[in-house]
Length: 164
Image (tube, rainbow, N blue to C red):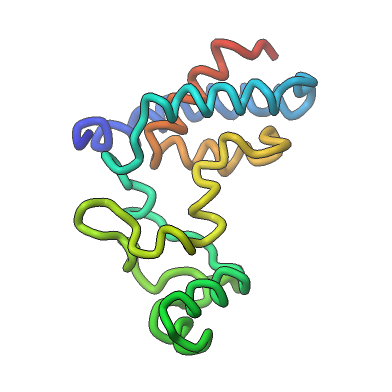
């Protein structure tokens, strides 16, 4: 896995122009069954990919924390929401709550999440490849191909299966 993660940013960069062109066409004329196809490719990829072998998302990026996330996680940690914010979060340039540091504070040495059952919505949905109206998040998806081997594989499979 370490070798894959080492090569991934370069591979994603090499495919970036091709991916942008593909997603540009996809946005203009998404197939009616795109969400169904995406769900299928997502499930196929994650039947082969175990996130616990990687956890690169947790090691290199941080999720956005919604107010609901903050309330749920702080309750789980037996903290007041403001205590949780002060201890773990900061406000970024977009005025969103994000982690103060990466890798994620809640990532264990075994790649397990210490707050898995109450983790942020952004973590539950990552890498967003099974999301409704998937074609509307192309910039995020292209960014994720440099972080998540599964997202990279799904985009490559999309280009094989979906003719635009």
